[in-house]
Amino acid sequence: MCGIVGYIGPKEKKEILLEGLQELEYRGYDSAGIALIENDTLKYFKSIGKLENLRVKTKNYTSEGFGVCIGHTRWATHGKPTELNAHPHLGAYSFVIHNGIIENYQEIKDELLAGGVNFLSQTDTETIVHYFEKNCKRNGHAFEAFQQTVERLQGAYATLLISEAAPDTIFFAKNGSPMLIAFDGDDVYFASSDSPVIGRATEVYYLEDGEYGYAKAGEVKLFDENGEKSFTRQALTADKVLAQKDGYRFFMEKEIYEQSRVMGETMMGRVLDESIVFDELDNSLFEGIKAIKICACGTSYHSALTSAYLFERIAKVRCDVEIASEFRYKEPLLTKDTLFITISQSGETADTLEALKMAKRAGLKSLSICNVDNSSIVRESDAAILTRAGIEKGVASTKAFATQTMVLWMLALYMGQERATVSSARLKAEIGAMLHTPKALIVTDELHAKLHRLSKRYLHGHGFFFIGRDIFFPLALEGALKLKEISYLHAEGYPAGEMKHGPIALADSELFTIALMPKTMHYDKIKSNVEELSARDATILAISPEPFKLADDFIQTQYSSHPMVEFFEMMVVTQLLALEISVRLGNDVDMPRNLAKSVTVE
Ligand code: AGP
Image (cartoon, rainbow, N blue to C red; front, side, top):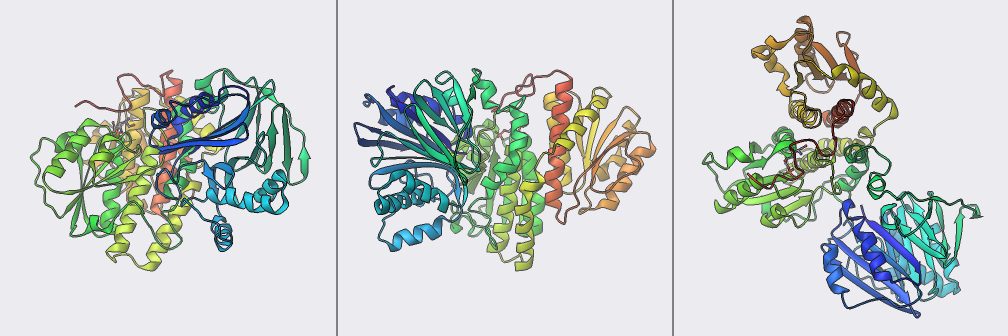
């Protein structure tokens, strides 16, 4: 998600912008830029990579006197992370920054191109500033030009625009992406969330969808479709960490709730109406490839296991999955017709990085699926697909797992397209299910409240079994890991069909079985596995769209036509169950004992 900061006033602006953007780094980004107007002249600086690069570029610059300024960190959606695509975007005498997606940007851009406007970037954002200047030239009144621009835009946006046509003004508009206005006397601030302005401003107004306007020193005019409107400021919190949690109790909780939104970003520009595209991949990567080997650790290993079913079922390509720490020392047989994929949220996991280096020494082509651009694993790989989950602060991984699994599903379908193993009807059905996934990830109050109530019964016992079949077996492994990590209770993920080969000996009323019972995948078989456990007095928590009368507890999920949609919905249930049990046990949900967010040692 992009970060936005703006300021009007006499204070030094570079530090306000850079420090403010630094507070938004947790959202993740791949480029950054600032623009200022002081003494009626425009200045701007942009850089790719981390904010430190922008600090280097601006080290000899300090602003002077009254002025307006805007700053932005970009998470690439349209166009690669380059300096040209970095915000702010420049017109002839104006700058704009934007978070979101302008859905009708192409039609506006085509009109502007036909009118002789030159575009420097591949972004949807640049359309805003050129359209503003087209309107401005026409009627000469900057705010009316901005008003006409906003009225034309469709989609999600939080945008700030400054112009030499109004050198003491910041124009703003908000629809679908967050943005606030903050106040300190006559000084006015803008930001995507609280943390950049905490400690600088004392009052805040959180813009609503459809609101826009302009700000000058000591004056903010707010409008919506009904014309000018009044607004009430409220006191701004002084607690930055609390602010970064956006009102949730833990980063992990926030990240579970974010899954629905970030999944849309993971798919953006990649899942099209009738095809999957990866701009970041060159088809040469797949030339001569007859098999896939995936290496990962922990939760990333679980998304890898899930994808093995998909690669073989959809792309008809053999797929082996290995735990990196085992792979490193097993003297593996590696052949050059194998594509070596590593999966890592951090991109710094030592075992996974070393496994990658082994594969490269053996001459294999490599692809990483990672959440952190420019990380060691990304840099070491021939190609990389970023999951775009945004920075994940909870040690127990949630949205990274969800987006890894989605990228792998997309990749299986992409390879199916390239290898002609998928019919157009199957392709459309899979894409339809993908596009429905963000809805399946929505956390309803009813579901969360039920899991909160139900969790009180699972605070002891001699252990948990999470059981599932097919892709729900790796999900069972992941559910067990989540619970272990943050509750410190013992849990195992197990193939449901394997319980009768030994583990069922553990069945009694103190053995808690979390049964993943999808309707779209071997339902009758999983049902009989669970009945065997219930017959031996195991306590059953069934998760299924189909009511199961032998369950001691039951979470009803939605009927779906696709197993992956059931997968993601059940994933949310297991994440919230672990969270609520951990909370009841009084554990540190975000930083569980003995664990680190990135295991950079063997
Ligand atoms: C997941 O909840 C854990 N924090 C851990 O298993 C993690 O998945 C593992 O250490 C791998 O990390 P990576 O994805 O950053 O490589």
